[in-house]
Structure formats: C-alpha cells, structure tokens
Image 1: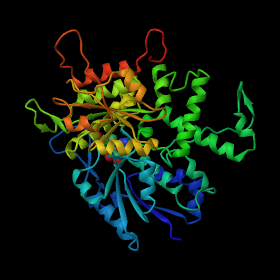
Image 2: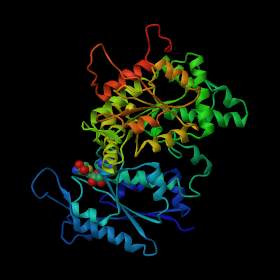
Image 3: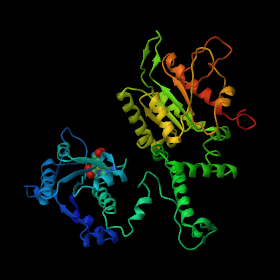
Image 4: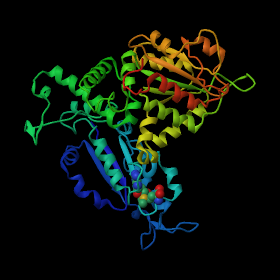
Length: 462
Ligand SMILES: C[S@@+](CC[C@H](N)C(=O)[O-])C[C@H]1O[C@@H](n2cnc3c(N)ncnc32)[C@H](O)[C@@H]1O
C-alpha cells in the first residue's frame, strides 16, 4: 500500500524534527505508512538575503509573506511526487475549522501539501494556489506549523495500520458525532471514586449498552452544538429515555428534568417530545395576501431561549427561501461554534435546538423520523374560529409518547388552509382588553408557560 504523503511548506522545518520521532508517528514513518517532506520557500528566492516577506501595501503592522517563494514552494512540492494528485491546504485562522469529519475526508488523499504562514500572514494571491484553507480554531497562532502538525497527527491515526487496534477509532470522540464514554483503569477505587460496577461485571452486552448510553449523555450535556446535529437511532433513544427516567426517579440533580427542564416538562415528556415551529410561509400580510416574511434575529433568539427554558426538544425555523435558510445558518454558526459560543455559552445552548426547514411537511417528516411517530400538530392564531381548544383540552388529546408540534405564524398569522391542516387550533391568547396584537415572541413565551410552566406548588400543570 502506498503511504499517505505530506509536504509541508514552511520557513521552520526544524520545528517538526523531534515531534516526528514521537511514538506512533515515528513508527508510522519507519513502517512507510506515512511520509513527511519539507519545502522551504527560502529555496525559491533570488536575493542574497533569501527574502520571503515584505511590508504590506497600504501600510500597517508587521510583514506579509511574499507570493513568489510560497507559490513556487507549493508547485515544487506538487511536482516532487508526480504520481499523486496533490491537495493543497493553507493553514490559516480564516479557514474552515478542522474537524474529525474533515480529517476523514482528507484521509482519502494520497498527497497533502500543508502551507504554513508566519508573521502577518500570506499575500492574498497565494490563496489562488491552494484548494482549501483550514483553521485549528478561532484563535491566532504565531505560525501554521502547529496547525500542520495537528493535521498530520490527526490524519495519520486514520491511516490503516498506524493505530494497532483500529476498532478503538470507532468509539472515539467525534468518530460518529458523539463524545467518547468515560474510561477507567486500576485501581478500582481512587480517592473515594469507584469504578462503575457495570465495568467490573464481565457482561459484555451490558458494558456495550452502558458505554453507548454514556456517550449519548455526555454529548448531550457537554456539547449541545454536536447534539443538535445528531440523530439517535431506536436503541439510542431507548437508552436515553431509560437514563432520563432513572435520573428523574432518583431526583438526580444532573438529570435534564432537574436541571434544564422544569418538572412541568418532565410531565410533558411522559406525553411526548415537544417542538415549536415558526412559519414564515404560508402566512398572511396585512391585506390578507399569502406571503413569505423575512426572518428576524429577535424571533430566532427569543423563541430559542423560551424553547430551552421550557424544555422543548426542537425549534424549527420554517422558510422556503434558500437565502433566508442560509442566513439562519450563518447566525447559528456564529452563536453555536463561532465567537458567540465562547462569549455566550447559554445562548449557544438555546440556539443548539434550532433547525431550519423549507416547509411544514419537512418539519413533520423530521419529527416523525426522529421519534418514530408523527406529531400532534397544534396551530395558534390571534383570531377566533370554530372548534378551538384550550390547554386542558389539548392535553387530553395528546397521547402518551406522541410528539407535539406547536405552530406559530409570522406576519398577520397562519393561513386558514394551514390552520385546517392542524390537528387542533388553540384559543387565542387574550387579556381584559380588546387589543390582541402580541408579537410572535411574546405569544410563544406565554403559550409555553401556560403549557409547561411551573406553578407555585412546583408540580406538573393540571
Ligand atoms: C499570526 S498568524 C497571521 C494571522 C493573520 N494576520 C490574520 O489575522 O488572519 C500567522 C500564521 O499562523 C497560522 N495560523 C494562525 N492561527 C491559525 C489557526 N487558528 N489555524 C491555522 N493556522 C493558523 C497561519 O498560517 C497564519 O498565516
């Protein structure tokens, strides 16, 4: 089998030397499974001082890496292994974030050229000579060498033969969208902390199920951003439900029922998982025309926060417009994994529940696929119509285990056709006045509090 080849374009190849001699990588290099070469852009300079950087046009701090020696270095690296198609990667804090998924995709390449920057970074025109730009994360390093090492290190683990027991890769964190389960070794007890009994049982099936359950619980607790993109299968859903039921019965302070979700929701969870959908189409405008409204940042944030507070599973933002769907994606990216995630962890947690959908059918399909059963669809409107129900009647119609989907309309409200499609339509929210022009955010919050809010006795809603 031919090795996976790395060519590192760097001004500081010596930084790699002792690192490459390390345990696993050293063996992989010796066994010919991985190959690492270096190209120094200084070799492609034509002046006495081997100049690779210069001052920025337009003024400013620091030095910028020159295009000629770096592009020549990239081209020389590719030409040195003509039998492989080179994939050229620029290491930069402006690139896509490196993930296990990206590494898995890169592992299919036979030759990777990793281009390391320094100083103030690259002359912009170097970017035309690479295939992609990767970042280690939203922070700035002094140079790309540490990032190149991360790529080589993470990717080498995926090369067959480098890790002795390749089965261990399958349960590792991020291999399948989850974090790994807790691990223990001797002694059985350390400073009052005992190894879980199941791991000493010798019962392989029990151990497998416990580990799988721990992976789910860990990911849900620690990484709401990963959890939002993960769809548990039937066994995983059962393992989660069992863990939650056990924790709730034991009054475990870490159980979702005791932490994120109030007891009202614990009662609702016995009925089924609850989602809310904000529809931007089909809705009416002030003249009664059917229109598509634009999403607002306030609705996105505030309804997500309410949904998280009242223990809902999902908040679907529904718009058929791809530009609006992309906008939601960009906002979510900022808050879930970008700068906002670091500064506002609780906002990231709320927004982790948001999903974008093109229409109501897609929402219903997603819920049905996730929970194995179609939801009871409950619409809301500020207008009176025949057959509307109050919250108590709604709870009577809601079967145990059935998912519930609450529909909210933007603009001047959901169309009659959509209200007709719902299994139930709630009575309008109203106060002691004849004014009922609540914002959809306020309506959502009031509705969720009526259905799932704690009352003074701290018991489930009647
Ligand atoms: C000091 S940084 C330059 C940052 C640049 N002025 C900017 O603001 O985008 C020097 C070099 O370190 C590398 N680098 C810095 N942070 C990185 C990160 N998060 N991921 C990958 N490479 C990084 C890049 O190769 C970059 O060109």
